[in-house]
Amino acid sequence: MILTAHQPVYLPWLGLFHKIALSDAFCYFNDVQYQVKDYNSRNKIKTANGAIWLTVPVLTKGYREKKIKEIEINNSIDWRKKHWKSIYLNYKKAPYFNKYANFLEETYKREWRYLVDLNEEMLKWFLEQLGIKVDYFKASELNFQSYKSELVLDMCKKLRADSYIFGALGKDYAQEENFVKNGVKIYFQDYKHPIYPQLYGEFMPYMSIIDLLFNCGENSLAILMSGNITRQNLDFN
Image (cartoon, rainbow, N blue to C red; front, side, top):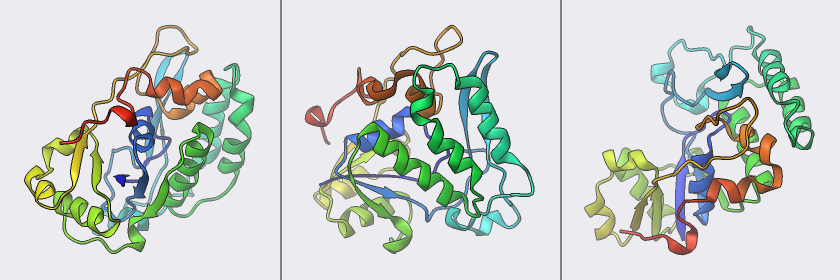
């Protein structure tokens, strides 16, 4: 079984979905520490004036002692109205806006307490729209032990995975020899960002997945996989 994992992120970029599409199983890593100014609570969309950040405000008091699953959204700020308005105004003329708008509009009408719940709701919907099917696990329900590389290895053992896909940054901490000793093959993703039709002139990479969906609709999965390694061609260490 090929396994991958990722911490909760808001309106993820294309590379996350490529990594999941290569796998049999995905672990939603909601048991790690919250990272300020990371993609846990923000991401970018394209506008006529360039890229802008959409950031979910959170209650940061004591965040250093909290895991991401415990981080609460600061609903005293009307962020939901702002985010939906930004998405609507900047994508309403996109070819596939009407195909996906209802889900997002309804999602922003709901009040969310925990950031991980909002991110997970969106992630599962994005996977469904892209047609990516994997076995889905949540780290908080599995009691993984250790830290970084050893934690990933523990996850592989408990989920009986014989292969694991790291993101590109995995090279900074993965202790490859330990995976070899335990019979787990590993692969480090090297995602090549595709170019696709966008609104507002010159192409800008590294936008949220909604930019691709609104512009390319049912072709989105083929586009995000284009120019990248496929499941059939994976070359594990």
